[in-house]
Image (tube, rainbow, N blue to C red; front, side, top):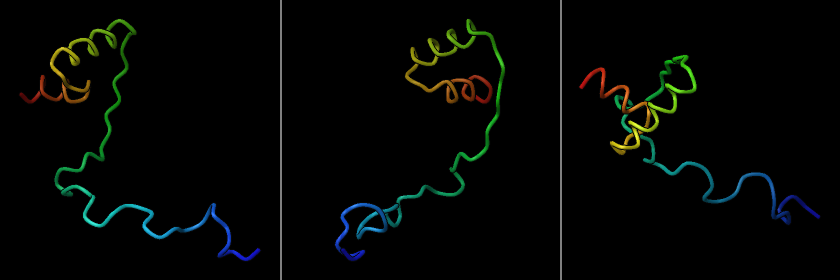
Length: 66
């Protein structure tokens, strides 16, 4: 069996990230801030964020920066 006969592993035609699928570099979220909190605060943040239809990160950033 040659490598061309295999149907698993390796590079496939059409695989990988599509051209133009990346976002504007100015909008890329590639920095992380870690906040330690109690289980209760974590739950309360999650509930508040969900009520507004946001992720916890988006909720916190909206609270700080408006």
